[in-house]
Length: 195
Ligand code: AP5
Image 1: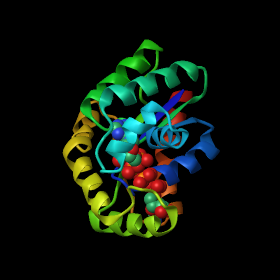
Image 2 (image 1 turned 90 degrees about the vertical axis):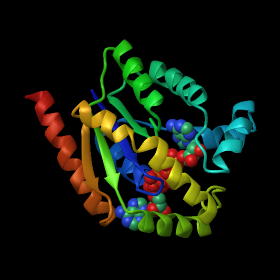
Image 3 (image 1 turned 180 degrees about the vertical axis):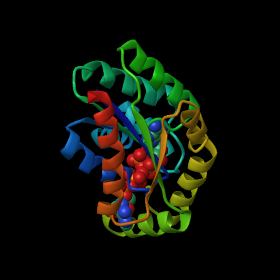
Image 4 (image 1 turned 120 degrees about the vertical axis):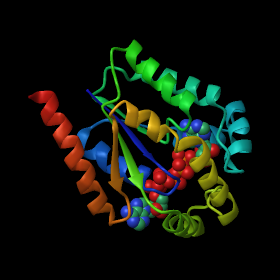
C-alpha cells in the first residue's frame, strides 16, 4: 500500500503531478480543493461556507475538511493507496491524517514537497487565471494564498521531517523532469516494500 502526500505551495504542481502519479501507480486521488470546488458547484450548504474562505484565499476550517476526508478514507480503504493533494494543510490536519490511517492499519509512505519560488508560483497562477476562471486565481487572492501557505502549511514540513517522511523535489523544471524525480522516489519505496 502506498500513501503519498503531495505537498507544496499553490501553483507548485501538486494537481499536475498527481494526474501522472494516478496513471502510473493506480492510486486513489484525494484533492480537497477539487472536493470543495465540487461542493461549491453543487450549491450545497458546505459549498456555500467553503466559498467564503476559498474566494479570499483563506483555509476552510479544519473540522469541515477533516470530516470530508474521514468519510473518503473509509470508503476507499481497500484500494492500492492514496495520493493526498492539498491535504494536510495545517498541523491539526496532519495529526488527524496520521490517526485516521493508523485506525485502518496504514501509514503515510512519503511526503513529496514540490519546491518552487514564490515569483514563479505567482507567474504560473496569474497565467492560469486568465484561462481557468478559478475565482482564487487573481493576483490579490494568490498573494493571500501564498502567505497562508507560508504561515499555516509550511510548518508541516518540520512535522514530517521529524518522522523521516519528507522528500524535497525541485519543482521548477518541466512537468516531465519533476515527474522523473518523483518516480525515482516512489520506485525506490516500492522496491523497499517488495524486498
Ligand atoms: P487547492 O485546490 O488545493 O489549490 P492550491 O493548493 O492553491 O493549488 P493549485 O491547484 O492552485 O496548484 P497546484 O499545486 O495543484 O498546481 P497545479 O498542478 O494546478 O486549494 C484551493 C483552496 O481550497 C485553498 O486555498 C483553500 O481555501 C481550500 N482548501 C483546499 N484544501 C484545503 C485544506 N486541506 N484545508 C483547508 N482549506 C483547503 O499547477 C498550477 C499551474 O502551473 C497550472 O497552470 C499548471 O499547468 C502549471 N504547472 C504545473 N507544473 C508546472 C511546471 N513544472 N512548469 C510550469 N508550469 C507548471
